[in-house]
Length: 363
Image (cartoon, rainbow, N blue to C red; front, side, top):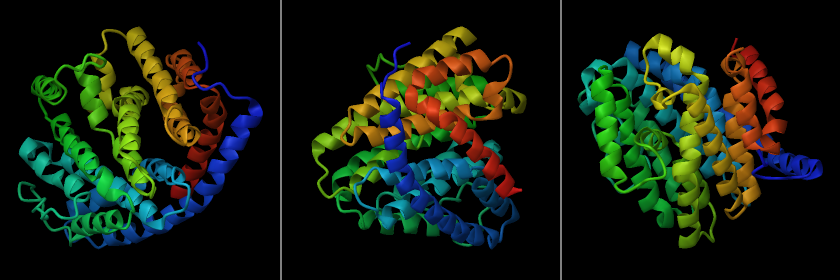
């Protein structure tokens, strides 16, 4: 399988060193932001919401670090961007936990909760009562504070006005997450299929579950937020970024997540996107195709090497999980690593060490 981003060893290490300098500063700032929100979560009056908020911060730190990777895209450091990336990912993960706990409350509850994802990126919109259909209500202003932080940070980005219509559209599509938690698998799949047909009429490149999975990933939103930090952002930049991140990088993210968690999801009865493929062999082949296409699309963007680092980090982060190295998955995982190219191969052992360090720190 040809490398989608052929680089010499010297180029690989030079690229990673440049990204690492940005990341080291950024990840320290992420930790500071996370401590602030963790303290806020600990003071939530309602026990169920407090538990979901703390779990989403403590158990999904990898998602927040992944969002912070987009900090490396602009040419200059922008603290407003980093604060926005962190707060928005916290909202995303928090709502996923809250919605899953209250799956029995129906999709109206999920859609209402996910209005926070839209309104966080639309400073002029009125703020909703996010918990009006939810079994629990008193979060002490936690979700509202996250939304307000995102709004203030958006307003501080020089090109936010140019990306706002697209980023709000992508956030609105993320309401498909509410359908994922339908307790009836047949109703869930029928709803997702119908939603994809309405939202992406005429789209032939991806199947309905790949499209709904891509819409449920936060990666496209993060890419646009990073683009908004560039003062010289153009409409052409917006179009190219959209074409690369949706559907390719977002679909690859969702399918990799489903791939590495498939045993756990099956045990818990959770929706498994990967299970919609006709066979395990075809699933592995399709994931490889998505990963390869993602690397190529990332490379074509302005600052393409930095986007390529993010794409490779995404692949390596998922495949560094122990669940991707079980005996029955080892061969398939190795082929996906190869599909990710030279950057993914270099990053994989680094991300495994990161997982060990993070687990020790959490303990």
